[in-house]
Length: 190
Image 1 (cartoon, one colour):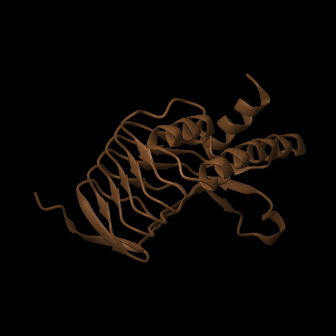
Image 2: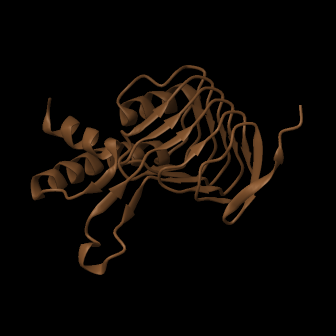
């Protein structure tokens, strides 16, 4: 397995990352390469097909034809996001995806949503350490505009998170959550 894949797998597994200087260089190289792709995505207007091709290059796999990701878009690493079919990601989203972001089928993500999988140690002497925890958006999730999801959170299937919410803990399936920090408002109405 190549050094790149070893480092990325280590980050997806979560926990405290005491990265060696070689591993940090590997991550920096990935970020630099993928920043060029993100710049291409954001520099001019593209058709859905052109954007999908650029996102496929960024993510490192073929993004499904039924998925649409709008620009502008930003990410720290870019290749630790895994998107399934019929996903819609609106403009101005930011994915800090080093720890891994999994987006299941039929997920809708509003504008300016931030998905954050990386944190730092509380202890000032250890603050250079990275702590990664993945984010999982299960099928049919809808995140409203300007939602922020913090490391380690799973949003249960069919759930809605209201605009401007800060999600610090897992969201139950079939629920509506709102606020900062987000709390359950009610069950979905069918």
